[in-house]
Structures are given as structure tokens and as C-alpha cells.
Length: 211
Image (cartoon, rainbow, N blue to C red; front, side, top):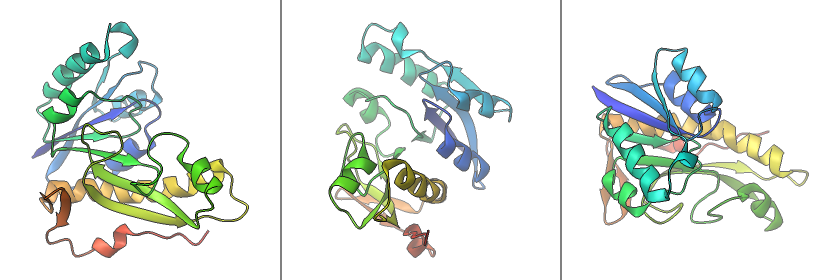
């Protein structure tokens, strides 16, 4: 049984999608947030999942918070750490600790539009498609070996909010699939790239809604 620890900062819609699609052979061991008021904590607790709130404002430095966070995460002996809307830049020491077993989802087609305001930037750039990327976490922000990407069209009338909503639908499909692949042992990192081993449904990772 593989233990999964999910880190959130808000309502955790991707966390909810992952919990509801927890694959055989895995359990959601805990949901941890850097915001005690995160709505996702109550959602997880109501489903019998252990929760931990660590207010990053209570720590004197990013390093101190990350040390406390790592201690909390390790208390659940994780095989996989999942960042699901965790709005903190992690230190290099923290990312090295979970190298090869920590996933993130970013709302752009990486390496394009790292950082914030991805949807507004995609619209401003005149992109015809946008999307999301699941990747293994490294010390460099929004970089790391890419597991899968989901694609949506960008419409002429799109606003950042309408585009974000369309991308989020794909995130809720793609992220649980990536977690399942990890649990099944289907993801292999070779020379900085992810190879998919025995994933029959891999083309489904590229999702293009029509609306």
C-alpha cells in the first residue's frame, strides 16, 4: 500500500479529484496545508483523512517552515507527495528530500508561462491552445520532468477566468491519472525525461474539450 500525502493552500479541487479517484494499492495518508483556514482541510477531515495545518506565518524563515513541513510529511511515511494548489515556493533542500516522488500540476503547457497569471499571459500572447502540465518537482520553480500535459483551445472571447475554468476541467482528469501511473510504477525518469512504461491509455493524457 502506497501512502500519498497531499499539500494544499485553499479549497483543493485537485486534491478532491485525486481523493475521489484514489487508485487500488494507494491510500491518502494525509492532507497538509500552510493555511489553517484552507477549505480543503475540512473537506478531507469530513472523509476521515488525517489533516495538518502549518501556518507558514508562524515560522521565521522559509527554511524553518520547510523543515517543519518535512517533519509533518514524513510522519505519514509518504511514497508520494502531491502538490495540489500548494502556493509556496519550496526550498531546494525540501525538493531534494522528495526527489522523484513529488508531483505538481501547473496551469500552462510548460515550459511556457511558468509562475503566476498563466491564463492572462497565454491570452495576451495570442496562444491558440493552452493547458496544464503534471511534472516531477525540482528546485527550479515550475520545472522538472514532465509526466503529462492536457490541452484546451483558447477562444477569441476568452477571459483569464473562462480559460482557467476550462483548463481546470482537464486538471481534474489529468492529475488523478498521473497519480495512478505513479502508484502502478509506470513512470520512469531517464536522463531528465519521463518514460511511460506499460500505460495503455497514455494518449488520453492529451484532453481537448470542445467547449
